[in-house]
Image 1: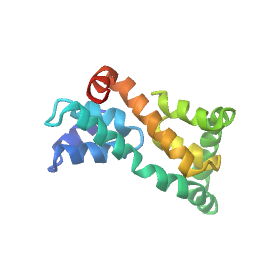
Image 2: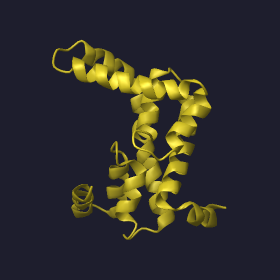
Image 3: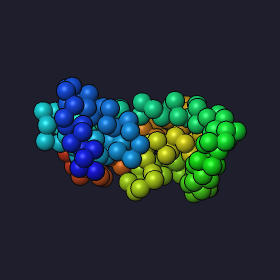
Length: 162
């Protein structure tokens, strides 16, 4: 992870843009993007906001395109196995969410554990055919909660925004 962090730190662009881009990448998302740049030139509240927004940018796109892309990849020789594997792991996650539907999606995204987060939540929402208009606010809230837990920023955020 240190090499990934160094890659982003060395990019010749403003820190806010580095954080925005890093937070869009699966596995990094907003949680790591904030940790990468906490000692930078941006106050924590702004860094938090930029990272959460960056984390959410790919979510509606994923929700719209995940299923059609998986179906298309399953028809190819080269990527069929990968598509079936990805669909299987997403279905396994979706089963956990299915019982509580929208509330389950919120909890799934809010728990800062490997394999959870906004990007995985968007894939799960796509598999479950959840409406974007209802799922997106919950993914946003879950992202805020997970990022706050991960960065220890809950107390700082409550001071800034409450």
